[in-house]
Length: 169
Ligand SMILES: Cc1cc2nc3c(=O)[nH]c(=O)nc-3n(C[C@H](O)[C@H](O)[C@H](O)COP(=O)(O)O)c2cc1C
Image 1 (cartoon, rainbow, N blue to C red):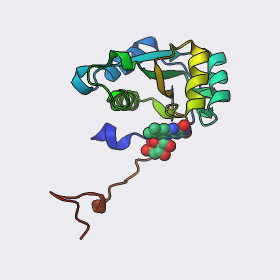
Image 2: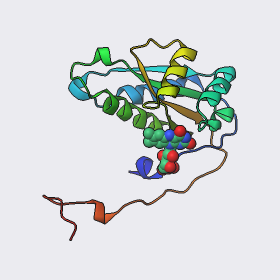
Image 3: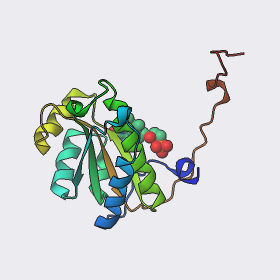
Image 4: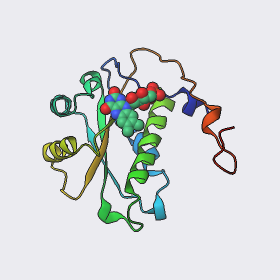
C-alpha cells in the first residue's frame, strides 16, 4: 500500500545514472505482471542514449522529462504472442504499472508517457527504433533520480463505488 499510494508521476530528474542491476529489477517487476491466459505478449526496449531521447521528445511532445532522465523503457506488445486475442493492451498496461511501482519502491521516479493508440506516435517510434510493423509500442516510461519529492494524492471517491448493482443513491 505504501508503494501504491506514494507513487506519483515524476517529471524532474537530477540527470544521475541508474545502475543496470536496478534496471533489471524494473524489468523483472514488469514480467511478473498478470496477463490473460498467462500469454506475456510483451517486449521492452531500454533506451539510455541521449540522442534517442532527443529524437523521441521531437516525436512525442509530452515526453520532455526525458531530457534529464537516466533511461527510457518502451513497453511493447506483440499481438502474435497472444493466445487469448484482444487482451494485449491490458497485459502490457499491467507490466507498465509494475515498472512504475518498482521504480518508486527503489527510490527512483518515473512517468508513463502514452504512445498507443496515437497512430502518429506509434508509426514514428516504430520507424525510429526499428520495431517490427506487427508490434505496438504502448508507452515510454521516463525513469530517473527524482529532483524533488511529490506528496501522495488522495483520489479516493466513494461515489465511484457500487455494491452488487450500479446504484448512485
Ligand atoms: C495511459 C497514460 C498516458 C500518459 N501519458 C503521459 C504523457 O504523455 N506525458 C506525461 O507527462 N504524463 C503522462 N501520463 C501521466 C499522467 O498525466 C499522470 O499519471 C496523472 O496526471 C496522475 O498523476 P500521478 O501519476 O502523479 O498520480 C500518462 C498516464 C497514463 C496512464
